Amino acid sequence: VMTLGPERLRIVFAMAGALLVFNVLAFAFGEAPSDTLARAFMGTWGTAYGIGQVLFKSTPIIMTGLAFHVGLRAGLFNIGAEGQLALAGLLGAYVGCSLPESVPWLLAVPVVLGVALLVGAAYSGIAGVMRARLGVHEIISGIMLNRCADVLLPWVLVAGLGTQGVRTADLPASATLPRLDRWIDGLSGSAVSVAFPLAVVVTVGVYAWLRRTRAGREMRWVGLGPDACQAQGINVAWRRVQAMLLSGALAAGAMAGTVLGYKGYFELGLGAGAGFTGIAVAMLGRAGPVGLIAAALVFGTLAQAGLAINAQVPKEATGVLEAVVIILVAAAAYRRRRQVAPPTEPNHDGASAPAGA
Picture 1 (cartoon, helix red, strand yellow):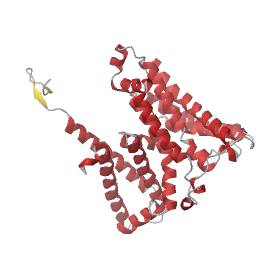
Picture 2: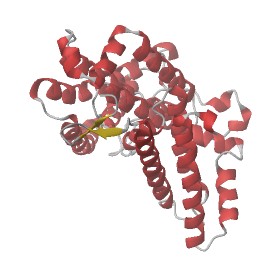
Picture 3: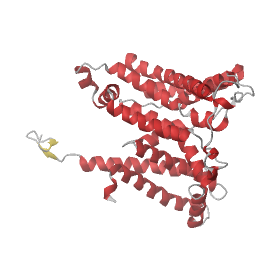
């Protein structure tokens, strides 16, 4: 087990704790834990349809988790992914609805996605500029912008962008992403689409970009020591704004799985919760792209399992499991920091100082 490494051990530790709490919840609702666990498995990884649904539910939180990761590497806390995804989904879908059926797929999908990415980047850029120029913390501005989106979306839909009050018109077929059951018969009926492999490719690409490009490296350095970066001539404010722009665009990219690959239109509440779940995904799988994707699959599994056992255990109970996973990950990370921290020894003034300092 020790060969798994600390980050993978963190996922194993969190899943073991979630399994224990799952058994307790099943028993509390008068169900046999083994039977409930079997139903949950069959509804998720036990059938091809369940696997497809897990992949579908994991797709948007891969993107929002990646969005949060990018901001975090630059020392920023992008809590506004909910609003960024919602506005991007609405405006991207509206532009897609305006396209004629004759527009080819190779043009329609990039146009819709491009609009969504620009909207997400612009909305997150507000928080980035406020942090860089005015010193307003992005958590405060992110919460404010989320609330603004909550108020703005229903009004805009009713005022003219929506056809049925709470949703837009259907996108033309050329502006949607095909589902994977077109090529994999076993996934028939599930909602997983091309958006899932696209999210995986984007995740690997963004991690590589952060490591291998000058802009990506400087963003990471800014997150580690902005004062030192400023002394070395790096434009800290600009790198922070860039990180927020990229983070917002990635959060907006989650609409590929919800709007383009699933519904074919935007409606109120579509993708709700993905922005906040993405924070947990980023914290759980922050070591690399494999860890982040695995963490998203964990939360996608919990979401689908909640539906599979809803007749026996309320779906809301899976929220407890998600909270347990987050708490256990935080506890494991804290324990590791305590283990790797250098020992302290008293100095001449009687205070403690790191050994060897």
